[in-house]
Image (tube, rainbow, N blue to C red; front, side):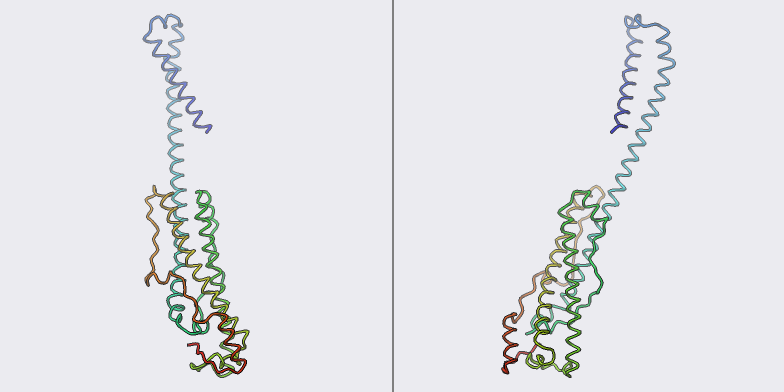
Amino acid sequence: MGFPFLIGLLLGGLSVFYVFLAVAAFSQEFALLINASVVAVLKDVVGPVSAGFGGAIAGAYSAYYLQRKNEEHKERRVDHLVVHGAAVQLSEMLKDLLALKKFNICPFMNSNLRFLGIPKSPISTTIVGVVEPKVIDVLLSRGSGAALSAVLMAASSYRVCCQNLSSRNKELDDYNALMQKAGLSLRTDLTICDILPAVGAGRLLGLYDLCEDALVRLDEAIANLQGAIESLSEVVESQFRKEGSKNIKFTFEGGEEYFTKISDPFISKKQFEELIKECEGGGERVMSWS
């Protein structure tokens, strides 16, 4: 604020000075009030010096203004790339989960006991879904608090989803090891009553809970990621339109059904507990997991 004020003050002073010279030159009555030597000094010395000084000031201000505009443009360009990069990162997370749902989950949705029918999930065991600090800084500086909340929520739900799926993978490994030890791993005609003595009721109930909770977290992560991408698209549209940015669009080959919520299991938790009690009591109720 100080530099533009100084420039305005100097330019205003020069304007008043030139108006004074013009009046002195064309008004004889006013000129008689001023000493001729003073007028000569003002015209021949002060005038050229002030003109040169004013030109230098105007040039400096122009350079300052253009440099500032250029820096602002570069800053906006960098911020635009940061926001767009965050949207691309979230899109990759969303594609991973949709592909997992399409190929590893949905084909086994009609299994009587899907918590045993759904295979292990091909995910990394490392912590993923971390939002970079520069993304947080840009969204905060742009006043996009709602978009920031959506991004943080999406990243958190993606992390939780992957952790749950990883925990289920470990439990499935332990389950398969017990089944192999009991000589049942290659059989496909097994019922719950056949499996129960080999692995125990507690492990089966734990696998049921892990599977159903993982499926809920999967749907939540997909919905949150989709919402965060839409929020970032709105930020790009409203904040970076001057950069010629295009709307961020997400596409997934496979159909809209993979964005919908997974249906409830064929057998509820309470029904499964009753089935286990029947097996433990010597009942002959049969339910295959296939």
